[in-house]
Amino acid sequence: MSEERQQPESSESFRTISTRRAFMARLLAVGGAALGATAGAAMFGYKVAPVRAASNADIVNFGNAAVGAERIGIAFYSNALGEASQFSNGTKDLAKGVLLNSGHRTYFMAARNQETQHLATLLSVPGLGFGFSVFGFPAGTFDSARAMVAFGEQLESVFIGAYLGAVQTSAAAHTSLGDTVAELAAQILGVECEHRVLIRDIAGLTPPNDRFFEGDQSATPPDTTLGNTGVRSTVYASGDAAVNALLALGITPIS
Image (cartoon, rainbow, N blue to C red; front, side, top):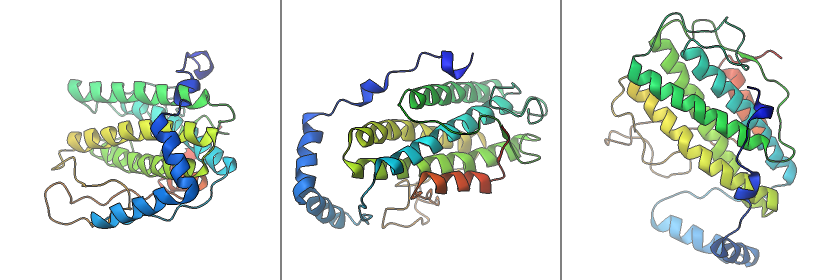
């Protein structure tokens, strides 16, 4: 079924602004929230990134990148299952044999369903889209389980960094579109983090949940402490930067 025929969750469900959010917006308008956040963060040892002015064009740039990323995600999980999708490069990148056991196949099937719903909901936000729908992967990505899950972890790390950047940029805009995309990006971000941990679990990495914080905003660097050994995902400053990171992995937009 094409993405246009899916019944996405309406973007209107992401537009409701709570009393608390309205209150925080008023604080931001007078600078109080920024001061309070900085002081609180310093108390707990966090680094707070400076908030820059963001426009709707910046937000759309992130939203468009997210549409492309979700199509790539659907292609990745479908290829891994040996099943072509509308975003896959035909049968060229399909897994060479059954690379996952039944339990792990269930993980990947669920992840594909989640990426499909993410895409449908992103496309329900007016103005979002991406110029490519079919993507190829580097040679050998689906030749073995080891290669596949290693690539999957890199892929999900870029997704996480892209959505972190989208939340930061969109929330800073204080517009209706910014509120919509920030909330949606935060909701998707949590699920992409789940995907990364499940992939690390499949790979047998210990522990699969290997970071105190996601992204590069924490003052606490990775160390030898259990649960904090991982290198955090980069937070991308723009949708274009996130797309370039995906291209750097060897993903090829085809059509």
